[in-house]
Image (cartoon, rainbow, N blue to C red; front, side, top):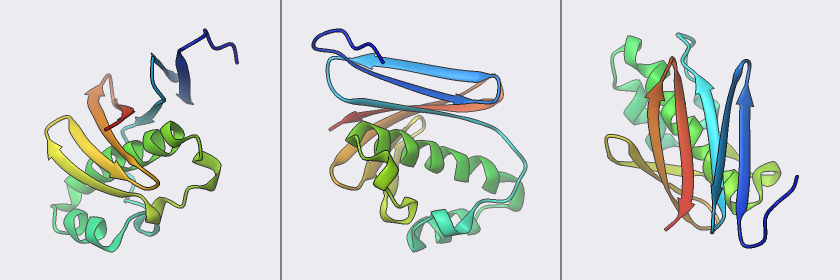
Length: 125
């Protein structure tokens, strides 16, 4: 991958979707198409599982994907995505569109729902 001097570049793709990010600091991005499939409970911390399990069943897949996208973007931002265990990355929502991810550092993750997908960008706090 070509990286201009002083810039960080990150790419995510899923199916026909792609998300590109660039910043003057390490950046991670992830895109996840919305799906009605049940959450992958084993990818969550116990606290995350409890919060998502308490939601109505119809809301659980979206809530899971928001946290999953934050975990993926954060792991990419650290530069250690291949070493990251999703259960070790803790996500803490702050406000609509913002979630914090913690594992080997802390990222502020900005997410949005756009065109049937969750898009997430992670930057260091």
